[in-house]
Length: 403
Ligand SMILES: Cc1cc2nc3c(=O)[nH]c(=O)nc-3n(C[C@H](O)[C@H](O)[C@H](O)COP(=O)(O)OP(=O)(O)OC[C@H]3O[C@@H](n4cnc5c(N)ncnc54)[C@H](O)[C@@H]3O)c2cc1C
Image 1: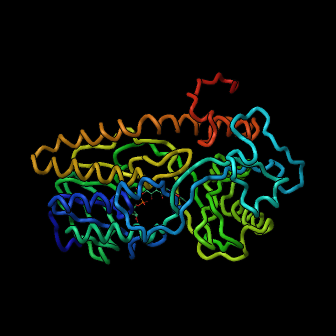
Image 2: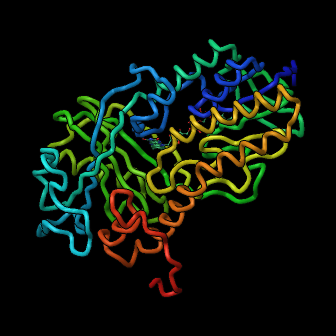
Image 3: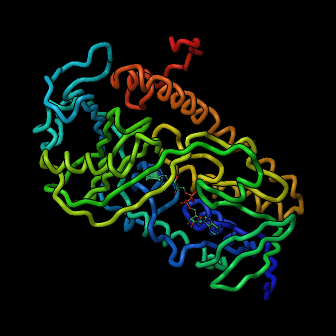
């Protein structure tokens, strides 16, 4: 039974980075904002490798307290395809430019991976950024929203959506919300985005363990192997522990957890990781790029709900925060001027910012998927992974035989 009705200028559904930034910005401009999240404790169980690029910290004036470790380089590791058996080590990857050991003067492989050199090949690329504490980030953005004046409710789940009102269950009690504008920041499985489109986006499944390290690692490592179907694994270090995870297609032969366990054993074996798991998480990584429609009526989609996650790298925190901020600014203008049609300008802005890189990434993702079974890991990556020059080349239409 619905006990009360709340009217507000702006309802924000989801207190991840997109929703909390949106709520904070809108409230700081004087809107009457309600931010809800179904989690019992905001920020709990984030599913994230926790890497953010350096410039995001400055752009949002984020507290250095969220930083766990600074990193300057990303190491891309390509495992031999017959990983469990020993195979000969090739110092050069045939046919791939811009790759080789020690590609960056003065930089060497991380010491534990040196021991496994007969099973992998690697490339270093600059990738300045931070491994942050996602729980602390999410919590601090929600607190900022509250201190700017937003009403923040956790354990508040959006249940139903009607034309002009929304039913939310807050701590076992249902209430009706009647907002003037809605920002849907409810993540990759967004129910609001689902109600706007019959097209279901594709996802990779991301599984991750936080594991102890034997020694500190200086950089992020991503690793590729055919068994990590259509995706990749990562080790993102934070002092003496790291996020060890992978994103891959889940299908009948591809089991993400078993595959992660295999690589956990491998990294324990080569001396990088100590036995033991501090925490586990699982989440979805959207692959389909920007949704066909991100504004309808008085609703704007932001972050993962809008499909802004990068379909090749899986990174989505910067786009979530930027889209949240921009949607909030448009909402402020629309309410001040009493013009709901201004929301269309949010769609135009987001497409001008992200259509280019994300459509390119979707094309690269499709190419990667198409090549996966028939070609070697090295030739797939030379065209489809961001560390290689070939990533920048436009994707040519392939003929039916895949050539
Ligand atoms: C395994 C993994 C690793 C990743 N690693 C990185 C990384 O290293 N760097 C990076 O930039 N990105 C990474 N990403 C992507 C990144 O986590 C997302 O892009 C980012 O969280 C998107 O933020 P968001 O606010 O749009 O959505 P979310 O963070 O998903 O927040 C959505 C919120 O909505 C709430 N919600 C959902 N439904 C409802 C409902 N019905 N009612 C109320 N509340 C609801 C949820 O509880 C949640 O708090 C990773 C993703 C995965 C899965």
